[in-house]
Amino acid sequence: MKATSVALMAVTSICGVTACGNSNGASQATGKSTTVDITFWHPWTSASSNAINAVIAEFNATHKDVHVDAIGNQTTQKQTIALAGGTPPDVMLTDSTNVIPWAAQGAIAPLNSYMKTNNFSVNQFIPSTMNPMDYNNQVYALPYSVGIESALLYNKKDFKEAGISQPPKTLGELYADAQKLTKKGSKGNITQVGFIPDFPWFDPVFWPLVFGGKFYDASTNQVTPDDPANVQALEFERKFYVLYGENQLNKFKSGFGKLGTADDPLVNGQLAMEAGWDYTDSQYRGAGQPIGVATFPYPDGHPELQGAGLIGPDAVLIPAKAKHKQAAWEFIEWMMSKKAQILFSEKGNSIPSVTADLTDPSLLSNPSDKVMIPFYKMASSKNLGSFPSSTYAAQYAQAMSDEGEKVLLGQENAETAMKNVKQQIQPLVKPTSN
Image (cartoon, rainbow, N blue to C red):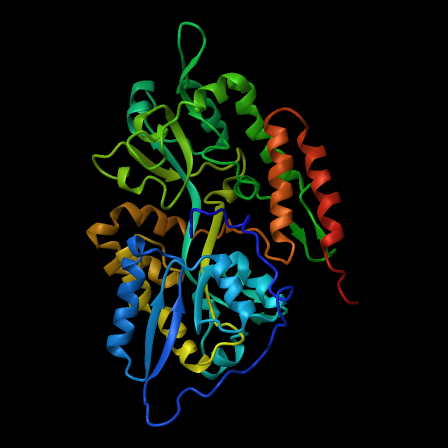
């Protein structure tokens, strides 16, 4: 789930396939049965489902009234088809970018009544993780496990050879260190590069957040891709292409090996620094490993933006046509408990969505979680943000990406590019009622 940029998930229209319902669901049990069997769909394959399987096994072992049957490898496309077809599972775990479009189509159930009955508060979650879960003042999903892009990953050997004793704290230092860490051969060809702002991919959300940018102004109901901070972010990224030379850099990148392996350019030292997620090259981080971890640098003169970055949670929800909604809520509520959150994080090297669990002693003292400890600390930053969820979020993010890449390649200036985005997206914004 986390490998997908949180803002770029395209959502298939459900109501275009079939009529959407808002059924309250069937009764929880009939006849003599005292156990309700519910079905839970998640996206992990059999090879990567150990953590969620452990959580489900613990729930089933400690709950006699509800039994969970899990089905993995359920992609957004499969989930969308099931929601449209009228026979969805009782619970789904999906990318959070799906929540608002599905809620707008009436395909998933609001959770407010369940939360009110059980005195369940969303204040327990990392604040920004709830942004994609709300639609029309109703909560339609809860965050379960989060991914964050707020780290600077660096090759320790490259730093030592360049005489750099510590990672940069500001973006000015990052740019200066990138120059020190870049090497060229006798013919002027790049043999080692300090930093590439759009590697391994161009991220139209992370960089504006680093600069304190905004994407939407609720007071005017206007999208704000042309926010000055967003423009500054693109201008900063462009500096690296000017520094290295576009053709030289692209030629060098064409020789990079497979990500997450010993041939990964950050692992083998071809690339000295990279903006990284919590899952990036995790097996190569920590003591005795080639990659170090630091908080991503902040803009010069703006220490108040330290710890800025992108956060993207997975979402757990109940389809509107689920047969066993009350039992589904019992499972979802338990998934947010300390027991379930810590168990999933320990088994899956992931970040809990509940703020208090980020500092839980059992999590911080677990040897298998050592490579994650820096990210547990980063996840509590008040400067983490996300792309504003909306029914047009996919188009907005794609426009930001398309225009932003033109800036990096010198085909357009940053201010013009972001004004182009505004012209494309503002007509998609629904007028607010007076």
